[in-house]
Amino acid sequence: MSRLRASAALVTVAIMVAGPARAVLAPGQPDLAYGAYQRGYYRTAFDEAMKRVQADPHDAPAMTLIAELFADGVGAPQNLAEAMHWYKLAAEQGDKNAEYELGAAFLIGKGEKKDVAAALSWFQKAAAQDHAGAWFNLGVMALEGNGVASDFAQIRNGKIDRVEGRLCLGSCGQVYTGYSIAGAAGRFAEGCGGGV
Image 1 (tube, one colour):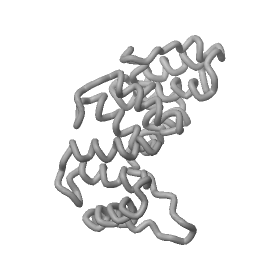
Image 2 (cartoon, rainbow, N blue to C red):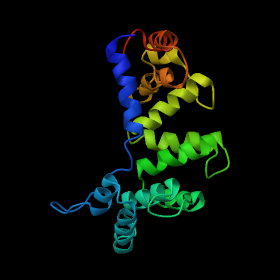
Image 3 (cartoon, rainbow, N blue to C red):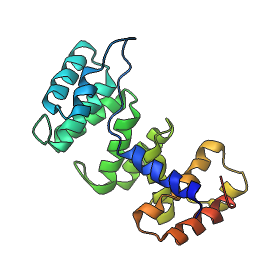
């Protein structure tokens, strides 16, 4: 496997664990909630995010941050039901990070009943907004035959458009989930005609 492909797989994993997205604030306005979260001041992050939601009931990044804090049990007592509630509110506003987290919750049955079809739907919504973790999981699901059609020949032959073709790139992430590097590289090359 080339270093470029290995680096792409590692970058995908790094993006997945980066945390909730920052809010779009007025120019020059600091994001106090996310700043506190980054510094480990979780209770302050929770309070600031709640203030933002009270001021703007459509502030999806603040909702996602609240959900994350409930899910992790930092800044607020751990409460998966409450986390799912906030993720759903944020996802209704189109927040790709909330959509991704809901997909992950449904995929593994954490905070929600395991439902592969629901996971697929949420991952597809997040992937449509270029969420790298969602693309990764769609790729893994395709390789595992877990609700996603994996027609690598169509990708190689250019019959699937550029966005859907990213599913092939996400599939390379199997290195992370247990395939040997050589095995994942072979599947990647097989599906993408040797490169993307």
